[in-house]
Length: 107
Length: 117
Image (cartoon, rainbow over all chains, first blue to last red; front, side):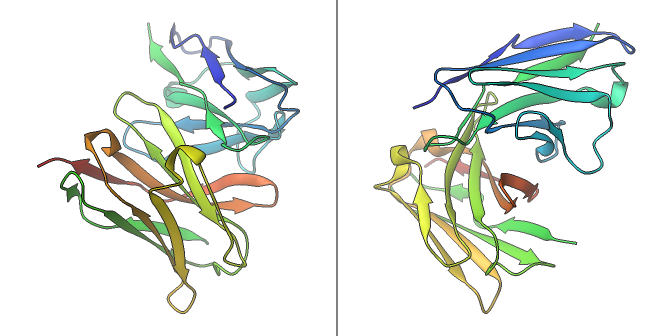
């Protein structure tokens, strides 16, 4: 299986911070990586598809980048509403696999 | 607007089968792909499988001997059956819909299933 390793597992941040989180694939997955945001008590919400494409309605402070094995999600100008767990997903190989998540918490 | 809603028993006994329904409104399940994903306590997420617009299926090999995804197009619903459950199948189960090449563009709210005697 393709292992997706997310780092860090948690981050303590302040409103206005620039936040960068990473996802590393155990093999080349091209750009078949999506990023999801999950707030407490809610279902996951798609943020980025195809590694770098912002989904409809997603604020432009969210940016995805990367290809191959290394992927990054950046939140510029962090807002309180962005507190959540973020997951990457690869769908280049069966089984599709998720990273373990990065949790954003307030300092 | 497409909406997905999971339903089914919240408690299942070990060794029994888990059966869930995903009811879809606002979009026909004869288009796109329709999947099941689960989130375990502690945040781990697992893709379980999907059923396509034509009724073909694909499953996570780790579940292949226990899982079945079917559909009823007349009711615009699709279903998950997971056999021989153990306490390790305790999770929140989500159904989701693809969009173009995006596997999970739309998600249901999820339903918690606890496996316990």
